[in-house]
Image (cartoon, rainbow, N blue to C red; front, side):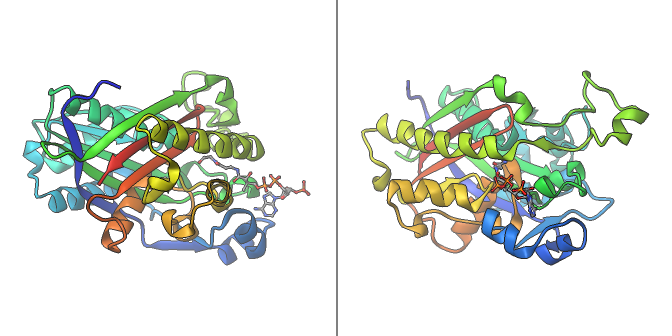
Length: 329
Ligand code: UT7
């Protein structure tokens, strides 16, 4: 990979809704049990955004905090990238709404749609603009209000998802720090393994589409699981090999939080200790493109993510998409 200017994360922020949905709450809605959910997914509770609020509210809160922590005036932002599959509207973009709320009027704005890999894609795009010397200050947000596209009658999916947002400010730096390399992958042949059938041009909203519950996520969990454990490990090896590193040289692995069993499977295969694998799926469920930036924020606040740490962030999701970023904090 040709290296240009260095880019590093100078501020993180996160926002989750107040309302908690526990496994006991779900037991009252579908035929499931706390035991099944904990054993098969590791999830104990998730957050649900209150009616009347939208993804823009979560991304605004997370972004304000990231900007404050980076000590950056929103007016200095060159670009805003929002990774999401649950924007406020199909058009205009979530990033334009966020730009207006932040009064970041110098910034260009666009959304990145790459399912749960969205944050990795957006961070890599942000890095490119900085590495090429085009921009200095980029805001990258992963935000999701998946509870709005979850079928609360489908026990196979409704126990999994939650709402949340994470944001980072990526800035040019002269230090030998920040993003070292990244990899972005996709395989569109797996498009129907995780998808939202209606609401796009293929199946616009109609009486039939609503009646048949086509505006909710559909997923083949088993296939995604098998794909995930394979590509997460491959991605870690690809990122480290390019820098002549081994997985054990890394301090922390921020893996997409889709199922605790996926994280544990990869960790055990790599023979690494659990302390190196931050987890928030137990408290937040799968927040899609927000899982990794929220985890970054949480580890930073807890003092477990430290200056000089070598970290990998790896995600996978709808598309199919997958990818990772290697970074020196
Ligand atoms: O963000 C990226 C996208 N998503 C993912 O990465 C998800 C990846 N996949 C998974 O995490 C897992 O496949 C699931 C958690 C979705 C499902 O776990 P599983 O161990 O693969 O279960 P399964 O689908 O093979 O189902 C096993 C059984 C079935 O019953 P039968 O056919 O054996 O009688 C299901 O009907 O468990 C049943 N089941 C449930 N039982 C209680 C499925 N969902 C539930 C539930 N409660 N919520």
